[in-house]
Length: 279
Image (cartoon, rainbow, N blue to C red; front, side, top):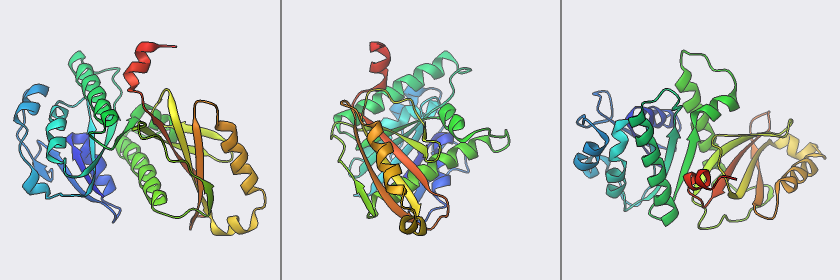
């Protein structure tokens, strides 16, 4: 997979992906240390109007591409122009929603516009899907994070989770029941399940989910010796199902001693719509 980060947050996450050999990465920003440096513009609209043609530098055709962007940054105004240049590829977007408590009104507006437009792109099928990630919920999920390296820790948690889900998606489960999510459910988020505590920690508060998938990673010895494991997993998965949500799972062999579970929620609803509808 190719990963393209747009803006400072996008570049940092693309860099975190680069530690895995399965990804080729590029960072696009206005700074000279970016892989691809573009001209700084004064506002959101100027990036949209004057975003450069990067096809020759990226040299992508027919690849799976993940574009990483945070909507609060002014440079995110160019994300639609970037997506247009990647239309010959299978595109997904990893969207980072920042803490907006101290953001300016302009930043809040930019973030809302970019987040909602990208969800509409996913819902219409113009891109394969969008992963929504809220940094505040990532921090809540992983616990206390020191100031030094704060965003590095959050970014690595997101990258590790998405990477392992990609690995499992391309692996054969030992056992499981997997139901293909609805083709309309292209708005997604990531999560981690604490298997022992049976507590889910989601990276975005995704409302009106239609599908949930659990990916269990279990050591081979435990799979051979633990006679209670199958019942523990299936009982938990069954308990999450209801009439409005399809739930499925897969169990995969890993070389790690500790067992873990990553999960995905899928929705067909642009999340701002749920906010407008309320309860």
